Amino acid sequence: MNSTFSSASEHNAYLMKIARRRVKFQKHAIVYLIVCSVISLLCLVSGGKVPIDLWWAWGIGLGFHGIGAYGLLLDEQKATEEEYRKLVRQEREN
Image 1 (cartoon, rainbow, N blue to C red):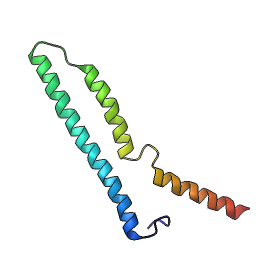
Image 2: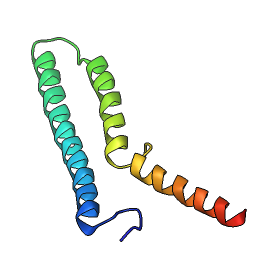
Image 3: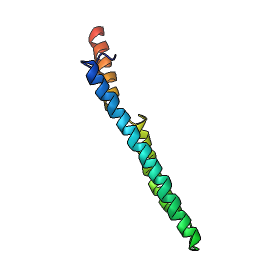
């Protein structure tokens, strides 16, 4: 277990937070695919053109959501732990 957590339950709560974030992203991705597909299909059937702008605009937002959900953006807990370790090392060197 990581030394920055005071208990196993605190560590489990952190893992649950990550799991919830990832499940929310997965739901967002499914909704994105369904809604964009239905709208595109309706546009094609009615003789219009596929709304590429919808796919791109929402897709960019979905991409950032995925990056955040899977930890590619700054994870505050992880960044705090790394900064703490750095400060401890600096203290030992002085």
